[in-house]
Image (cartoon, rainbow, N blue to C red):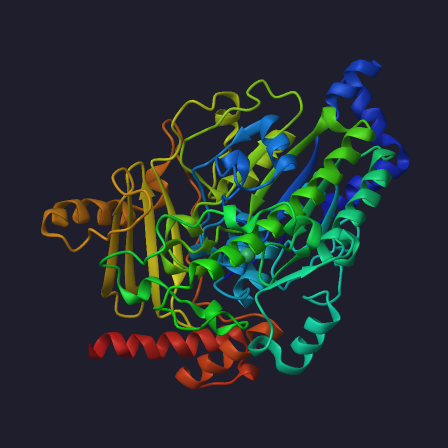
Length: 550
Ligand SMILES: [Ca+2]
């Protein structure tokens, strides 16, 4: 494959312009050079907030039992997207997808990142940070943006370091017993700054102070870590809730008729839960404890976002700053007898999305249209007045910001691997009414199982109606829509010309990928020394022979 290197030189050219003062001259030539005009012509700043494992349990998304005053304030200044869907409900795959505006089929990332993504896709297409950097933005990442991958932008990324628990007791148990000994939650009576997300917020405040005095606009991507497990938050955020008043989910049983492949409850193998039997429900008391912990983490992060909003306001930056609030995917907190991710259900794939700006005419409105997370990056570029590259598979949702009361995509698409080296995968499509999922053997192409939920009649996905006789024609139609793919589901008037190659099977990247690479070589032969491209060739040869004998 021929590599086209991303034009990083642009950023260097920009630096030279800036140093020589030419940039100022250029801006005077294109504007009328009046102070007012200069002010309005300045590119907007961005605070792009990415939460880890935050589902739509937020007051502004209708879950009023969750205390999120700052996110609610943001939502009141912007547009809420309650039907925004991630392309895969796991950190690495989702982040790789929305940070490049490519569906997982093209990124080739499952978990963690893949060598193909790092060594082919990123150099060829660039990431969100590189796009802003190359268009004159002071660009920084804080906390978790990528998964297990680092890129140096205007300054090195800020990472808070430290341990996943705060109390000395839990740190010691974690050190000696690991997951088997530590609970999946922690309440600690200490200041926010003892926790990683508190540290991330402080780093952002410091950077905002600095950015306020700079000529160039800024793009800050801020990746908060909670409510990812373990659910550790300062006591004061736990104290916002009365545990007895915390509602349980209305769909705590698994869906009737769903295949076993639909869930991987691997989270139950991590941490010391009430029990680790995936078929047994937690007691209501324990479920309430977990939900309490999750909401405490959500409120803790909400407070950190509040600090950032307050500082942006104090520095006089509000008039020219966009906020985008999202998560890398949703999270089951008891829905369908699941506490975790990696399923192809609404609680996982539906993720929060808010786009806000102080002067938005549509402030406080809700856009009900179907939106994909691959649409986020084109939207940000659109708002910044930067051309959207043709390879991007998303569409700017700018039209929904102007007029939220219109439909958007005809369907949204997601996928999920269900085996360490990705030979069984689920492919899921949600249209206005239905969610339809096919679980396939990707080597033979056989459909192993399918799920169908009527979201109009059964929004909580309690019954898989796929196997019911009266569903047979519907299944055929939905299967066709799933297989027609994302290009056939564009909003009216949009034709998509991106034509990105399918990625090779994911050969996992970095230290975190070692166990998966080991399983790969056990299955196909070869060794790590061969390199990822050779490993891919060996695998495809083996799989071709399987296809021939079947
Ligand atoms: Ca995540």
